[in-house]
Length: 80
Image 1 (cartoon, rainbow, N blue to C red):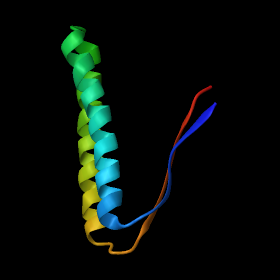
Image 2: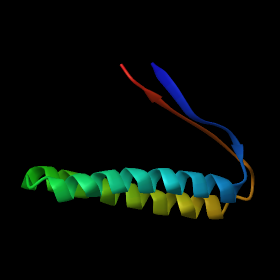
Image 3: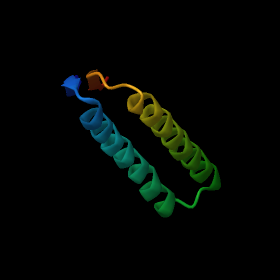
């Protein structure tokens, strides 16, 4: 099954807002799992994922802020 989440062209401001919100949802998901799970290895793994997402969002902001063109975004979830 394939769920199409985003498909379209967005100005840089809207694109950044949309992607930022999606990344924040993923970060909140990992944060909620950290607070519920006492497993040290799992906590470190989730913290690493959160840091990676934050870094990627920062890098994306830098790129988008330099780009005034519209951006094409496609995002889907593939469930197998």
